[in-house]
Length: 92
Image (cartoon, rainbow, N blue to C red; front, side):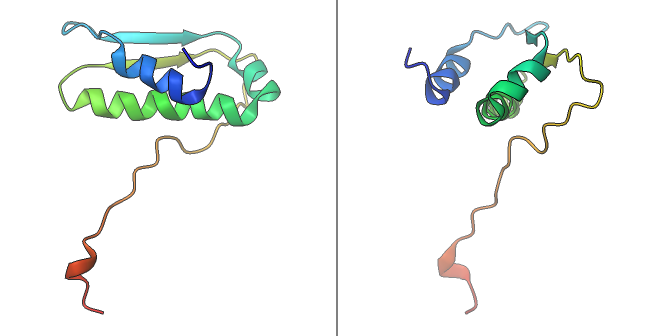
């Protein structure tokens, strides 16, 4: 794969999620990854969240479990989803 976030997203999209139980991605010491590569570490979680939401539409479960040595770890909002508006229906 391409060793970038797009390739990681492709991997998640191709991940076989069982009908029974689902799948979990487990990360140890995520605080260290976040400290070394903050932007990339957040992108990883963002892509997991987006794929988790998409898979839930078909009843499949994808979870990310993060372990951190920092009890105050914060990553901020993930998986932003914006509404698309039909410009032809706007009143202005």
